[in-house]
Amino acid sequence: MEQLEKESLREASKEVSEEFKTLINGDDLDSLKQLQHLILGRLQDSNAVLSHFNEYSEHCFAEVSSDFARNTRVLKSMKSDLDYIFQKLRNMKAKILSTYPDAFPDESTQEVFDRRPDLEMPQ
Image 1 (spheres, helix red, strand yellow):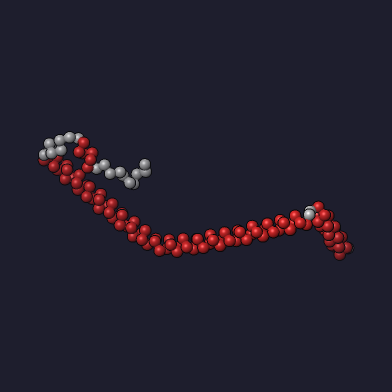
Image 2 (cartoon, one colour; image 1 turned 30 degrees about the horizontal axis):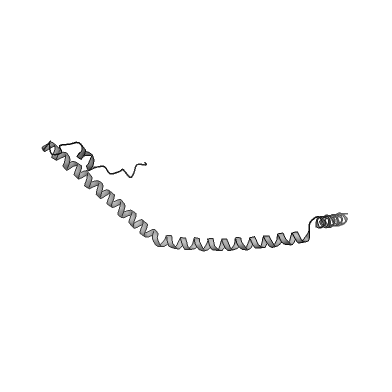
């Protein structure tokens, strides 16, 4: 019984597939197949190019990452040094102003000393 059922399913699927074959033109199927192969080839080429680019980018990043880290440390130390220098200058100016009140006669020079933008605050 089970064998008979399998055989009838197989015959039915063959008949349905034959009906589908009559609905679609074989030339159209060949054309679609060629287009799919062409697209597949282009996608594989693009994938190869992107893989090569990713490997190259990874190599370049490995070469320059140590330089970036070193330069970042240098810039941070320079910033702390400059902050220290400007703090000293502000203290010296305050001492001069306390000793000689007319040393800086106009208000405009007080703004000139420290008009640096605060790089840690978003703008």
